Length: 140
Image 1 (cartoon, rainbow, N blue to C red):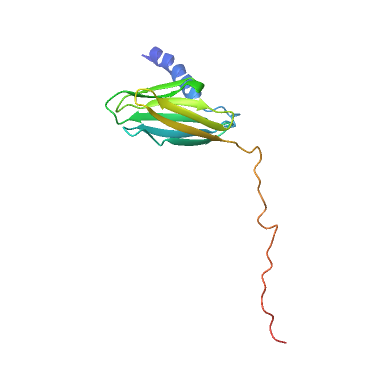
Image 2 (cartoon, one colour; image 1 turned 135 degrees about the horizontal axis):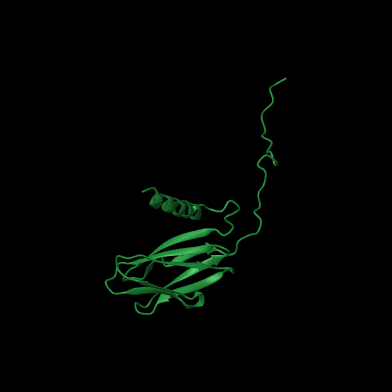
């Protein structure tokens, strides 16, 4: 009875260690998530926005009875979408620009706009430029 338990304990501990995030991980690549719904009118939302250097995770579903898709040949992404199910895909954009996605069967299209990201953030100290407020002087 003890022998099977001894076999299972190392298995469980190895699975728990696999779930832990590495301590030196800096989360260097941000992740942006979008849910996209395919309707008879097209994609909703039709335009997505992200920054260069971000990973973009798409969750796509459909309200149509006919099978639909989300296709981006430039990024080698094809998601087949069926009503009631969620398809997932992940993209990465290094450069700013406008990227189109579409579905040839439904003749619908959308766009992903990638904006450039600054390497440094301009931050000013709030107390540097103190504004002098005029106050009336008491009569002498």
